[in-house]
Length: 235
Image (cartoon, rainbow, N blue to C red):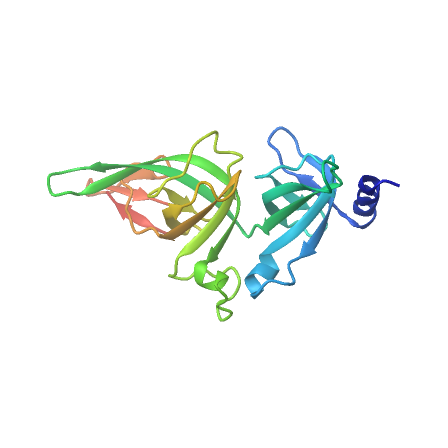
C-alpha cells in the first residue's frame, strides 16, 4: 500500500468528522487533530493545534472548519502538503481554535469644526469566527484565565475569506460578540496567506454617524445615539 493510501486510511480510521464552513455550501470531511503538547504555555496548548487531512482534501489557508463532535471551530492559518519529493501523502495545517465572533468595521474620520472635534462613520466589512486573546496571556501569563480580556493589548486572528479584497487598516474597529469595542493598532499583512493577526486596544472613540446605531429624539429635542442597549452615546 502506497504511503498516500496509508495516510488516507489512517485519517479515515482515527480522524473525526468535520465540516469546512463555506458560504457556497459546507464540505464534509475528516481530520486528525493533534494537540501542541510541546508548547511553552497553556494558551498555545489549548488554542493552537496541528491538523491532518487526506491528500485530496478541499481544505485551504483561511478556511474555518467545525469539529462535529465538540462543535469547536478552527481557523486554518497555514496549510501545506505532507510528503517526500513530489508525492503528496496528506495535507497538514496549523490551526487556531476560535473563541469569539467578530464584526469588522472600516472607519472614515472627519473633522467637524475648527477646534478639531472628530466624528467617525463606519461600514461593516466582516462578520466571522475568530480567536481573541490578551497578548500578555500569549506570552505565558498563567494568572490570566484563558479568554479573559485585559487592558493589555488584545490580539485577534480571523480569516480573509469574507473580506472581498478589503484590507483592514489601523484605526478600523472590531466588535466582539459581547459588545467589546476594539481599535486596530497594527497588523502584518504578510504573516499568513489568507488570515490576519491584528493587534488591538480598547476603542474609546465615539461614533456620531453609523448604521449600527438608531436615533432617538428626547423631549428636550436632543438626539441620542443608542447602541446595543448597554451604552448611550451623545451626538
